[in-house]
Image 1 (tube, rainbow, N blue to C red):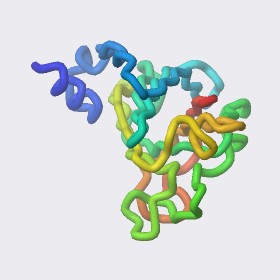
Image 2 (image 1 turned 45 degrees about the horizontal axis):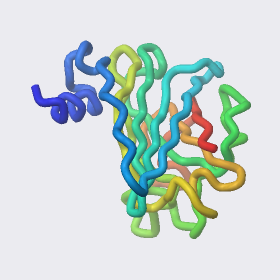
Image 3 (image 1 turned 60 degrees about the vertical axis):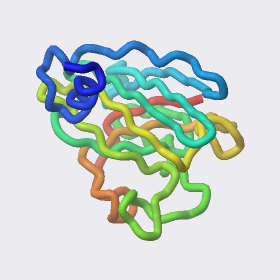
Length: 182
């Protein structure tokens, strides 16, 4: 199989378990692209994986790698939250609400949205691992309203999938994982 197809299949949970566990090489640094790497902590505060963020002039791309056992199998909501604070494991409420500088409604499918924290869902394989890449055209990595602003931000993973419409978080449920972005 071609690497791009393997990566796509793994991201949606259709690749063989051995393929889903392979990690693609880190993307090369490109001119004008800012990068960030950080760890993802689970509900108990343990390290369950990592994020790699690349931010350019037109988009921000987040690669998420979660180790086997990191999440429950199935779909999970994913959002950027306002504050880079994951020091309250099991709750992750110190990360505050979604990044939402223009007071938009929640939801990628909402006609009055999306807010800047909205991202596509990710799928955890049967073993709880995730290898996915998602993007946003509405948030920058750096700058006054960027993810790495004065108090940072957090990538929060929820227990359930986001329906991309209902307020305030599309039914995504409790916060089960968190990564500080500073």
